[in-house]
Image 1 (cartoon, rainbow, N blue to C red):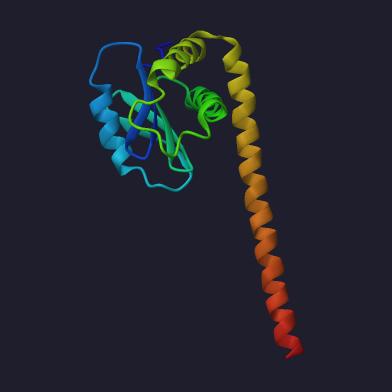
Image 2 (image 1 turned 180 degrees about the vertical axis):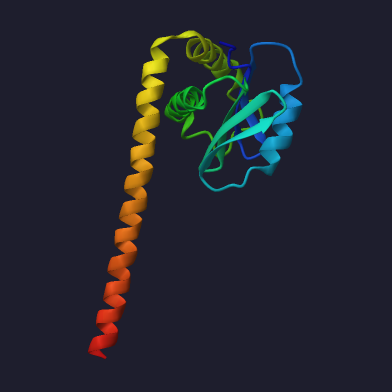
Length: 164
């Protein structure tokens, strides 16, 4: 399995930490992609050539990694969720006002270690499968709860109309 090639954490377009496991123009490419990511909370994978760009955006902080197109999407998002957890745990109070690369000295080592772990560990396959199934179940539950909430709202609307 090919590894996670590059990862970056940014606040909007301001890069706070990054790490590359091999040479390439990853920084330039991710800067272009990051500038196009909308500021609302989201997670998505872009495809470009033989590469996949996976990201999670939460509270204007973007956690992104680049893999080859064979890399499992669920494994990439497990990696990004771990990076997000570690980054917010360490720097929550400093993220909003941090200057470019403020966390790079310390956090690039964390990125390197986690990239290696999530690229090589076979334990991740089982975890990845379970997380994928849980995410799917959660999305179904969220949709169902949303549907119930809309029905209750509609029902209340019609009840009020009947009373009036």
